[in-house]
Image (cartoon, rainbow, N blue to C red):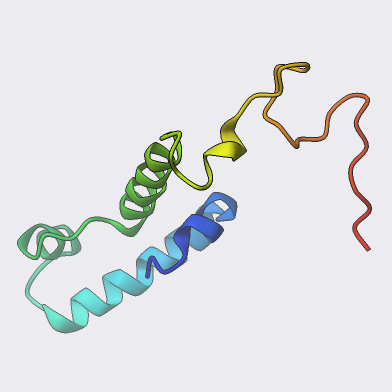
Length: 98
């Protein structure tokens, strides 16, 4: 349920997040009829899916902050503009998306 969440998590709406969480709730209910969702999560050491996606995303960001990480260059600031490099802004045209 968290496959490639680094890519799609930032654009997830609250409704879609609830829908995805519902899948986990239903699966746990089928497996453990006598337990509530919270009890199932606690008993089996699971987290809510939205919490897990947040932890994965934050962990990846911490890794990227390391100057040795291959994606660290994406965080470097433009010396001239004081903004992250490569971002469009005033006086900078966005590339054509054809």
